[in-house]
Amino acid sequence: MEINRINYEKFFLLYLDRELNPAEKQEVEKFLSENADLQKEFKLLQQTVLTPQEFVFEPKELLFRKEEKRRIIPFYRIQVAAAIAGLILGSWFIISVIIKNGKLDISGGQSMVAKDNSKENLSKAPAKNDPSDQTQGASLQPDNSTSQPADKTVAENLNAGKETANTQESKTNLNNRVNKSNQSVTPGPDPSANIVSGDNNPESALVAVQKSSKGLEVQSGPSQADAKHLMVSGQPAKSAAVLAIKAPPNTNTSDYENALTKDQEYQSDNAISVVALNDPNKGISKFFKKLTQRTPEETNARQIRVSVFQISY
Amino acid sequence: MTAEDYNDCVKLYADGLYRFMLKSTRQVEDARDLVQSSFEKLWEHRSEVNAQKCKSYLFTIAYHKMIDMNRKNRRLDFRETVPDQAGPSTATTTLLKEILEEALDRLNERQRSLVLLKDYEGYSYEEIAEITGLNGTQVKVTLHRARLILKEWLVSVENVL
Image (tube, rainbow over all chains, first blue to last red; front, side, top):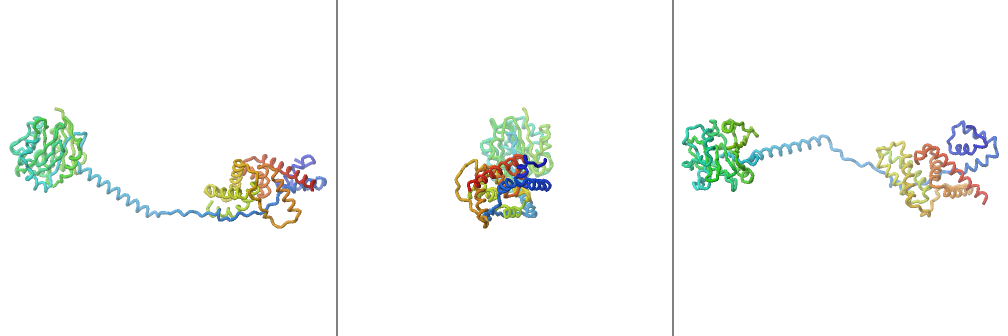
């Protein structure tokens, strides 16, 4: 667009605002020189342009900032921390597994007690033998009188229910005691008893088996060294059949006692529950496999074998 | 931008921003508050701001903060007289400045801000448009109207004198 006397004001303002290119500026200057009467108006517009004044903001320290130093943790420290955390977690896991394995496993409310006899208990158990226990409930007796295979005897005893207990040799029973009122187990030694497990390992597990929700009562006493027995007993009256299999002498039984004492919900009707400890040769497993025609479940093959069965009568 | 860039920005533009705010608001305390809050926001968003554009960022923030503040409190009285920190000048130029200062008060908020941004900071139409959120044409038209108002005021004063 060419500057003329009609649109000159716009060009004057653009000139003063420094929005024209050099060629346009020259054109405005040329127009002004050719139109002297408009120079006054140009000067008036030029006076509207403000002259910058100097102002100082003080103090500027109000505005200055410093970068906050962020603490940088060296990578090796992170590694050390991770290693420590891993050790703690690993220790916790191991301890929890040990504690878990040390407790009586109770599945589905079914009752079952298994317990190892410690050497201490072996020495103390005979003193604990109390014939009066036989009057309180089922007594667990070594089955010295039979030449039958152990598992067969157990099956028969179980089927016989309450009549399976042998009473004559109660003094040699295990000193284990489990009853419904306090769910306690008192271990008793019988180092020679291992028939039920079906293996020849003298350190086979102790197994107690109970039918029904009634208390499982296992008694033990001084054992006979040559006993080849199946310890099966039935509680009098309403009590159910109980089967106990000798535990190895080197197993601590206190944990199981405590666990059993604390747990009130481990029994149920029409059930046989089994917990076996230290059954490395799977003798107990074989026995119950014959008994129930089922393969026991192995929840912990290394230290504890836990098998739970439910049998319909 | 780094903390060092930010502090350089303070050194370079704090005074200019303060002048812009002072001329716009005519109130010393408001101008100081606006400058501080603008730099505060720049510091908070320093990671998102290019160091080379910190000036326009600052003026944009300050301008909008001033608009918001003026909308909240439409105060007409001056709390504190704007100090004249200009250097020594002749009586004519001093008189002209006083007249122009008076003339600036006759402009509306937008016109005054645009004149200040144009004359004090030397921004182009496009830059002013970016700062104020207007388009280039609006900036040009607004500025031209402001110039004509100032010119009319100067003519009227000359007639009186």
